[in-house]
Structures are given as C-alpha cells and as structure tokens.
Image (cartoon, rainbow, N blue to C red; front, side):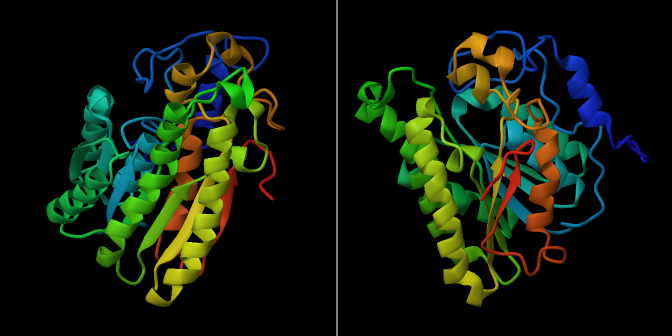
Length: 304
C-alpha cells in the first residue's frame, strides 16, 4: 500500500477506462450473479489506493455480498482499518470470494469465507453463528447482498419466482441476518444496510428492486429507533450507478454504454468510491452520534 496515495487515483483510473463517448462501458453481458474477472474494464475496489488509519482496529465485521463490487471494496477498507472480516457470498462466486480473502490477509487481518444462499432463513442464522464462532464475536453487520433484474415489459412481465428472488435476497435476508445478529451486538456496534438511488428515483424497469430499496430505508430508520437504547447504531448507504458484476449480469449489454451518464458527475462510480462512507458509519468514534440516516453516494443525484 502506498504511504502517500494520489487522492485522485480512483477517479483517474476510472476516467482512463472509459471507452464509449456516452460515458459508460463497452457492451457486455454475463449470467447472474456475475464475476469480476470477465468485466471490461475491471472495477476499482481500492486495491492500490485505500490506506487505513486503524479506525476499526480490533473490530469484527460481516459483509454479505462481500466477494465483489461494493462488498469487496468495503472488505478491503475494513481490513486495512484493522478489522477482521467475514464475507458472505453465493457458492458460485467462490472465485471472487477467494480473491477478496487474499486481499484481507494481505492487510494482516483474519478472513472468514461463508458461502450461503441467504434466501433461506436457516442459512442466515447459520452464517451469523459461524461468523461469531470464528471471529469471536461481531461488531459490524453490513447487509450488502442484493439482486436486481431489469425488465422491459413492466409489471405484467414480473413473475412470482422473479419477485421472490429479489425480495428474499434484498429484504428477507436483511431481516433474518439482523435478527440473528442482534443478540451478539453490544454497545458501539453498527448495522449498515445498502439502499440505492432507486429508492428515490425508481426506474420502471426495476419496479420490484426499487420497492425493496425504499423498504430498506424504512427498516433502517425504524430499527435505529428500536435499538438505539442498546447503543447500537443503524444506518444505510445509498449508492448510485456503480460498476460491479451485477451490472453486466442483470441488464442488456448495450445499456452499459450510457451507464451512469445521467448523473450530475456524468459517469458511473467505482466500488472504491463508496468505501469511505462505510468506514465512517462503522467507526464507533467518528460516527458515534450518527444513526437512522441514509448516506447517498450517487454521483450527485439527490437522496431526499
């Protein structure tokens, strides 16, 4: 890790990677859930730029969807800030999960890999039990795992099976994981949920996904009120369009040519550009009086 990083490096790397005139990426597609190595260009997770300052020293974190994208960026940042990190992921994402674990180990921290399908309540409970056993406890829960699938024919195209996948991944798993985690969280602990700009500017092609993200906002505020007297903080981060495997795996390839171009900053974000928000919200010192809020990292789109 460089001791004196170029603070503009993530943006410079991103700008250099753009190959379309519209502001997005080359057309490409993958099968869900998607993997990092086939992406063109590769996302920036902060591998070469994030420098930690012991802001999470000695803490223990679980990041669902921690194998790639935003989850990998948060895992790198947490490890370099001194936390031991467990990551949840689907078994078919093992390649990405192994790569993330290596980055956590390089930071000198413990990595715990927990493959599971979180659409099943028992898997959520087992995930928490294993993390607590292997890390010796839990201080930070990041509910990041999510699923979307863009559709072109509106509500009439939406099947119950499709809706179940979105709602169980994005909402049910968050409820089940948090229920299982709460008995293990003490004063100063933090729960961070992942919302989306879709909660504020819903796309007609993402009707079910946008609905779950609005629900996540309400869950965040309600839970913060419920557990505040226990010293547990609950917040959310609302990303805008971010370059992760979810994008080529869940929409038509040609759409990526203009991906993120409608933001005020005129481009999509890189996963590394969200890491700081997650570190801040997890820090017992820096965010000790921050709870029940949603932090937008949207390229300028409003979250109110």
